[in-house]
Image (tube, rainbow over all chains, first blue to last red; front, side):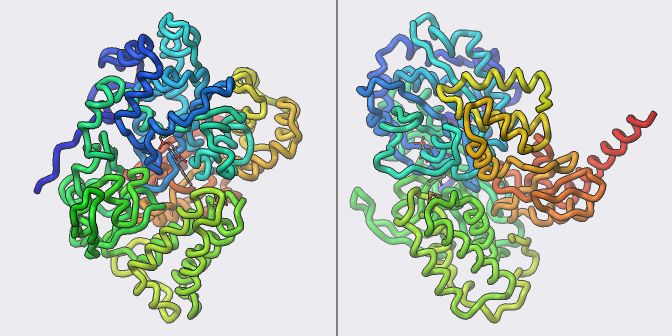
Length: 450
Length: 169
Ligand SMILES: Cc1cc2nc3c(=O)[nH]c(=O)nc-3n(C[C@H](O)[C@H](O)[C@H](O)COP(=O)(O)O)c2cc1C
Ligand code: SF4
Ligand code: FES
């Protein structure tokens, strides 16, 4: 079966010749029409459309957006805030950057519709500090939109007012975690909060009800309101509605971003047909399907089981449909859509050492299992790579990884232990060559990873 | 504090974006670092006074967020991504090339002997599809293999030479 055509909803104008990020171009392409229509509707109806659409968050956890909006405390009398999560720091993920750079008004329109639907008067775009251009582009776009009365006081003469501000982070991955982000926006270190009691929908920014949504999710809102929630469910597959952007990086012929109906394309189609297959003379060895926190898959392994609908499946890695549920069924996740591909030149101990160095650097340090565990895992894989492993190191690595998840304030604990757990489960033989291994473990032609 | 008038203007513009002044700490740190090159103890005191905070409230952010520094760096800042996708495509070689070209070591506190660059390894820059990637000051450079790293180094050296030439009487 050959790969389906791309279905570009969010990325329809990305890389289109002549398409620019100024408001005139956006308006020529029908921009802000959906906002105009939305302002004349009842906010409850807009929320109902998003609920009906079933759209799941594109930031990592895949939580249904409509359900999240439904949890917002609307009776407290306090202002409700919307925070746009533009931190995009999950390794392997690079979609939000293109939306903000090339189509910022699509995001602003999505934000304004979402703000109107939820009676939000103030929204913040939390953008990672490493995107200085992105921040400037967004500020310019907001100013343009304000000039045309799409943002600011009395939007389109409706009496509804709403401001959007851009807030830059400063290089910490944990600011992507929603409560860490809120702390950071309050001017503190990005220490995630203990949930409960701090569910952002009730006690978020400044202890007020707060919605945190990913950039891509908010762009979907615009299209959902445009076509109606029911029509949106016709795109994709049940419980995995809409389109999904896959960011593919690593060892393929054509890395890049591709948008498909969710669940309509398999991993094999994506990697072999869309991305042109492995590099010359190489074979695929492993793939991380949803950002570096997702559990790794090994080419050649098989997955058997029953779907929710009761159908039996027997898949190789290449047969797995790229959707939240299927990837969840085989023990990994769709996460943020970042697909990282490794071929047979890669030494898995080095690859894991690289990932572990990332997590050890990024732990916020509040919880002992996470702070100490991530550093300990890094130290073990690093000494393995440098030929200084101890006899007990394989078992020790597993034991450390197993003691982190479920014992921490935020999901970083899971995120940092899943790579180690899954690498050991699937490539354990590569980890047992130690400590007798020589200093250089790189197979012929392989690159340094650490 | 000797801040440029434009920096002061932007500081006054950004504070009212938030219902709580404390929220403006990160923006102020960015603005001052852009102006002065780094965050000095004086800057920490200044921000604290401006936002009605204790200096420790500001200092704890300077040490938590990797982008802030307390010492000056080279005239140009070369940040090489070290995370997996870039490493798979040769990011470590890219970094080694910059180190060799400028006779320096990658590290947050390092400055090349000529004062020209600080080379640093950073985590994923969210451009993994065009790996390996490098940021030089505010500019992202994609697919920077060792050869392109050499080219960029030559360019930086040429620009430095021109500047020196131009300032000669
Ligand atoms: C450690 C960690 C890092 C995260 N990083 C990001 C990120 O960079 N961008 C993002 O949108 N969500 C990130 N998330 C997920 C957010 O916490 C949150 O679920 C998301 O922004 C909600 O938006 P959505 O429902 O629209 O997906 C991260 C979560 C964790 C636990
Ligand atoms: S799990 Fe890690 S990142 Fe999350 S709060 Fe604890 S120490 Fe911080
Ligand atoms: S891994 Fe280098 S940009 Fe993402």
